[in-house]
Image (cartoon, rainbow, N blue to C red; front, side, top):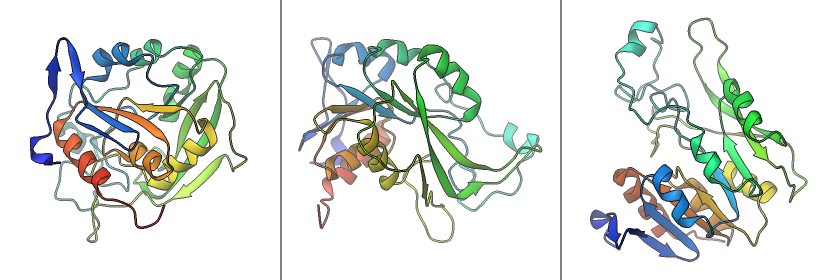
Length: 244
């Protein structure tokens, strides 16, 4: 597939997938508008919704040259123009049937909002090896909760996982400001989703959920609004693993 030609195709009011192979389907669409159209196509949700993507994992300033940022003052943050979509928004959760399991990466400050929507839940924790530097007197963010509701368990693994969240400095490269390690998504898929279920990631980003599902032989659907990241997802999915 020529990823330079990845695009959204409107056909009689529907969106045609830009990738459909090995049980993995990708749509270039806005999740809030498109979710109702695929309500019957998935049985579980695993996602990292957009919030705070101006700062990457590893404490790297997404506005700058890719070096680790040390100036986390109010004035430096004010120079970053926050995209209109880069806000915590729970309205999409109401579109998902209440009986379908969800696993949502989130900041701890919003756990109460998720618990108000889905009061039956449990938590897992992704522990980052390269935390964002502390600023404004706050602690450094080293742990990211994963809110899981209604909370079925499909594996007996630990409730926390330490993983390298990487850096854009020192010669390393990140494909997305908030890219998650593949092994973190594999851990979530094993523990929170039935192997026979199709998993939806409505905010696919760089496609790590889809990649993890593909490598595990599972079915998954991704939705990503940004064509740039859709191209990245297709590129990643086109690179076959050496061993499965």
